[in-house]
Length: 618
Image 1: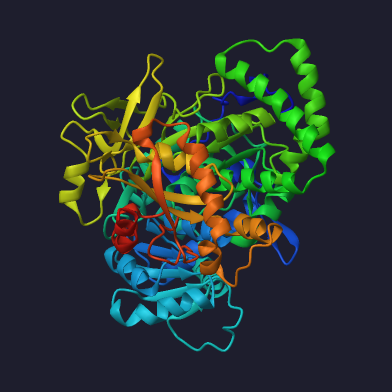
Image 2: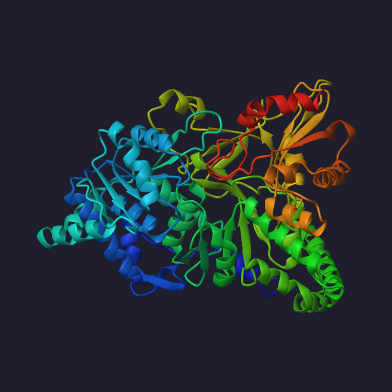
């Protein structure tokens, strides 16, 4: 976006219409309309490979026909255990084109979790990415009598595999071509048999408070949401998106795959999770959706690069971000930006801000979208000062993604915006809990009617578990999760998420869990940002031999204390953090303390580190 104050290109294009009452019907209409246009791109071995709509359709048709030839029946479930790759999308659309049910499994899940999810969903066909994921499948296959076949995307290292119930995706496509030669209309007949009210996908919750629950979404709900998103987000066929979040999460499945299917925007897939920073600079998405963890990481990278810059570069950035902040203040206040500020901003971009944007890879972005977790208002304002509006959306797996969204015309940092046009949102008058009602709300939890009844009341209102407020303009704010509100020993109600968001704004802190329920004061468990803290230690000549010794170093303890001291200044004395503990283990998504979306599980962390917590209270 060339002008921060020009919001004309941020208005949703209501003219986009892609007919279809089910996801496969919508997809095949898109294939016919867009034909040779590029839909997806993926980089492999240093080369970008493009997939047109026609090529995508051919692959989906062959995979679907292959499934039919294997006896995959309407309403049966197929699961996908893979990172975010193009084959994930092809397989998902093929399963849906068979009138089947598609379920995603996080590639970081352990074999025991794969077993539970396949058993709970009654999976009959399991798609896996490579030999690593195949090992998990083979480990649990004996305990899954309903699992008939395992299909592998990447057969590298598996050429000599001789297992009659394991085949490659290429082999499945070959079976599909043979089946289509005999029954040319096999896939079309299945697409026609698919009904809007049918179960389409399962999205399992992250299981922060027990075993994952399978949220059921119908074709009607998915199509309704895709059309609804088009009233919320400005996106069309000219846009480039980056596809990198897990496709088994509702954010990328709905906001990435299905919304791009509807609007025709291009999906660019990263090489692997480690190459995201490099790939985003190459792709330079025009519309960029990510979770706060990503936006925090980008901010940290700019702050670290700034420390290594020359005095002149630091001065140029300081002046430039000052100009950007002055404009951001006016935009947020709804005031006009005068011509002199516009001139200064043009200069600021030229001498400093463009470099920061290119370092992140958002130099072409008209706007950014953030969701899935709370984000610091200061971070939203910083991106706005760079000239890239950040729009916060809020929703959950059960609402098919976004239920509220901040419009570009009136950004309020810290707010999740008003209710989207396609659903109702209100507060429970007794508890302040946010309630949602609409066609986008899920069908219920698979095999758990009692949990469904607890979540959706008799009037159709979904009880989200989030507590919030709403202002005179209809903008909602999340104050906390109902179960997470802290009541100190002195009777003070404290919302830990506010403190945690401020802590995560530090380039040295990745995540935090504030403790203090029934306690005399607040303490916090912190997960450091390894890369940035290691860089600090090296620059300051702090000796360390491994991750644990790094967290124990006195200088690092002092560094984190100084970050906490800065944050404490923003809060009343009773809300200030008195003590902290640094996690001494470098956590990954495979560790039980983290959800697959890399958020610390509050209850589990409190239980696992109970001795360290007690030590903070003496």
